[in-house]
Image 1 (cartoon, protein in one colour):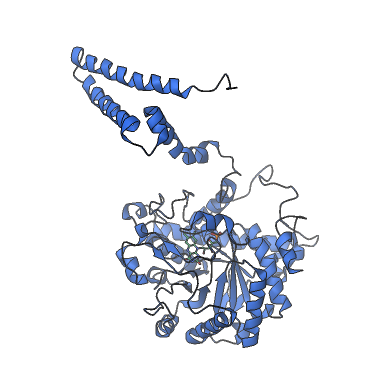
Image 2 (image 1 turned 180 degrees about the vertical axis):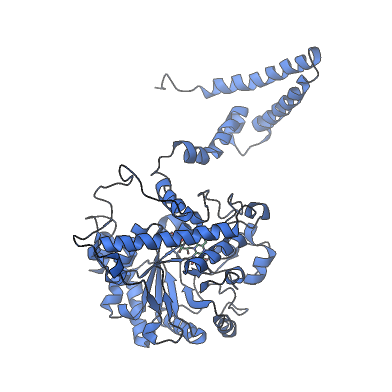
Length: 509
Ligand SMILES: Cc1cc2nc3c(=O)[nH]c(=O)nc-3n(C[C@H](O)[C@H](O)[C@H](O)COP(=O)(O)O)c2cc1C
């Protein structure tokens, strides 16, 4: 039985549609009898009546408009501004996705150099599903903490071994996904903070190089910047790039958490003439990278390819992937051991990772979450006896010091973030990275939107953010009774029984 309070849409729309015509008549008469100025409204109403007739009888693609006309249009308008209304007025501080207001506020405060202490109590849950860090009865004196220092390439005895001195680096984001002001602000901020920035898979890192920071050059599956006409590795281009003083490491992207099994995607709206030139692609088309490197068809060819990049570049070289099947990873590690060639680092990207653009079904359904994948990758490397021959980076919503130390306890050596740094630049989570319309000028190439992003100001925020994260890293480590993050193990986190980390890890036993 219909509810007594149900809205009678048909009656409302009849009233609205008739009311519109009546209003037109009233204003028409007033314009004629009282003052000519009423005709301004008459004209507007006349156009609306014509539009209403078109919606009702002229178009066929929207059933609601055909059935209810003008009234249905108000529904579309309200629906289109719904996200903004919810974000500003109705969503609670812990509700929004991917990052809640509480998450974002912490980054904004750190980036602005505002004290982030709070009163009364945590806004987060303290139920049985939360991963928490374990503190110690015997905190370490902060002055006894070892300086953060992770050496990449040391186990191969490379002259080019690189020392990472901050627990947090800027994860891959290309010039293309980001506008030039954003890239330059991040690069300048990285230089100020003494951290490292990944170039993303955008080809020659023109804007990344401008600000003097240390870089990890990313080679995506399309190999922009270092490829031959056929999409294979161009060794001359790679070795030329590797001689650039700022390029310290090479990351071969096998896959990415937001779209594992699919290559990078840059929508055509964001392909400017300069980007097309830097990547060597035509204008006016979406830029879609292959799902995998042509050279990497099986464990043997993948191991050979990594070794080849190591030798051509002479730099510490690693791979980035999102974990799918642990058995495939184990086989790859075994093959690497057989060929006696291991990457210098591995980047594990969680399925919850961000992207400039990806198909929704890939974002939502593929790839293990970071806190599932890390212990699995760590354990396979240990089982195979090679964990101490390489360094592990991790990414996937590691935007707070607590989450970073949790990742370090679960097996990582250094945390990476992309979206944490976008928030530091002033990202308001408008979710428009794929449209070239980013309102805060970060993921857009439109000059009028980039105008407001002041490179010097935002670079300071990036540096403040890294500084504050490092400060909290030290404080938390001391409270956990550890003199170095190297000493962290799974024992240092509380993993809820039946919670996020256990089920996939069981695949190993
Ligand atoms: C705007 C944007 C562009 C990205 N571009 C790349 C890319 O070029 N290559 C890549 O491997 N990952 C790319 N990523 C993924 C990030 O490097 C990172 O792996 C992922 O977002 C997880 O980190 P987060 O949760 O801190 O954002 C991009 C992410 C964002 C948000």
